[in-house]
Structures are given as C-alpha cells and as structure tokens.
Image (cartoon, rainbow, N blue to C red):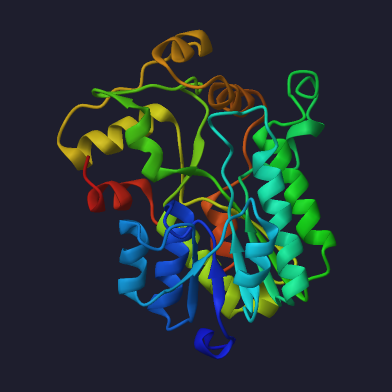
Length: 296
C-alpha cells in the first residue's frame, strides 16, 4: 500500500461532474496531489475544486495536444467520458476516451483508471441484442474503451464498472412516481457516486492489488418497488414505482437509448453486486443509507 501523496499528481477528468468530482474529493481527503482537468478555470464548479485543494489544469478531451500537456508529470489518470446527448449517433465518447489514453501513454502515465458501466463487454455478445444495437451505442463504445486501456501498455491499469447511480434517482422521479421500464420483479444494482470515488482512490493507493482488475461496483440490489418503499420511509412521503412499458416511458420524455438499456437489463441482467465490491475490500452505502443522507 502506497500513500497517495507520495505517488505524484493524479489527473482527474470529469472533475466537475459526478464520478470525477467524487474521485477528486476522495483523493484530496487522503492528501493526494489532484490535478483537475477543466475547460474553464473561471467556472464556479472549477473554483470549488480549487478551494478544496485541487490544482486546475486546462485541457479539452477533444484536443489531444492539450491532454498531453495536462498529463505531463502525472503519475495517474482517472478517465471518465459521457455520451454526446445532443448527438447520440456520434462516437464522441470513444474519440475523447482514446485521446486521453493516447495522451497518457505519450506523457508516461503509470496508472490509468477507466470507469465505464456494469455489464460492459457482455452487451454485444448476448443473443438478439447484436441485431438491435448500433455501432455507436454507448455501452459498446465503453467496451471498446476498456479494450483500448487493456492494450495500451500502462504499468498499472484498473477498470471500474459502476451500476445505476443513486444520485440519478431524482431524474427518474416524476412527482412521486419512479418512471422506468424496469421489470418490477427484476432487481437493479445501485451505487452511490461517493463510493465510486472511494473505489478509485483505493485502486490508486493499492495499485498492486487492483492492477489489471475489472471491478463491478454496487452498494445495493433492489427492485424498483423496493426502491420506492425505502425512499418513502427515508423521505417521509409516498413514492410509487408503477410498472410501465418502454413506450410509456419514452412518451414521458426519456431518451430511447436509456429505455433500451432498461429493456436489456430486464432480458439479460447486470452483474454488479455489493458482494463483488466487498470482495475487493471496498465500502459501499446501501440505498437506505444514501437516502437518509440525501433528501429529495
């Protein structure tokens, strides 16, 4: 086990977002030298990171040249990308991820941690789903990025595969109804983003144990009706989880790829479980613990 502050700077991408922000905070709490990649250092979220002790590094995932400069001198990189929600058919996520891998290799980064999603790598191998996906499906792109990281030749690399974010529960609430196409009888793996950050910090600190590991992350495993019951108790109001068809969920305004991912879960399932994370010595919150901490 190595003290994080002795490793050298760790560049955190997505530091003003959920996963990157949680990772930056977890690393800073352990005294790590955090370099937060930002496009606009004057932004309020960037200033908040700086106030916590992070060093702001200007760079753009679309510009490999800026990334090489940002990675220069860094011991480690935490890599996270999101789909381009304005153009879901584009390979934006893949291009940005590959840019960061290439820049990290050129800069001599030692430990690269890539976060993707639970079940990545199995999606296109499941019967019937290959015909329904597009090559630019986000889950497929994430699988390709994992392969890119594994093949890059980093001395240390780790893949984290988080489940459904507990922090995204407010986004599926319409009034007091959880709006999803999940089968009411099919449990869904859930994770708190702070636990993703904690897992990343642990993987950097215990690099030998997490080297070449692919870690499925979940803190709870519940059906949507069970989620509704827990939220109702924690928040002091009645939350419902009605059974809804994919067409009904899309009609409410949810994006088709998100609904298709829920259909995939209903048919195929997702592998993240709390016991998997715990087998790596990682601590995770249950949904009840999260809900009592985060009101809505």
